[in-house]
Image (cartoon, rainbow, N blue to C red; front, side, top):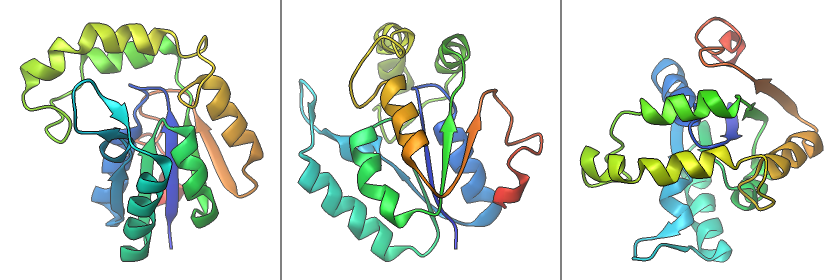
Length: 170
């Protein structure tokens, strides 16, 4: 049973890979963005205990799944249940290009215009990936990857999973 965690910078292709796996294998998909933030303005992180409860409910409902996000603190909660991790470690420039070409994400934004209004802030945030030192940073993701003792892989280019590098995920 596949139980895969996908993580990396915003714009790295986490959601694209997760959707590909869902479409080709039928695994269930959880995007941690929907759990990480409370629906309020200004945004505020969901308490870890509440997010953990929601994650465990998802895991208990699905035998095969992919969980993706950039939140190392939430991913730590999922690690004991997973049997594989994928670190989408693309160059920042590729992540920015992906963000600029991102289709509308209706589960995150009320409209494509609302999503695009947030683009400048997102690009600035993506560009600081290696400078940050929080649970959303490159250093946190590298620590997560290095500590994991199960099956793991690092993808460094868009389309790696489409060109056969992830064919064994199927």
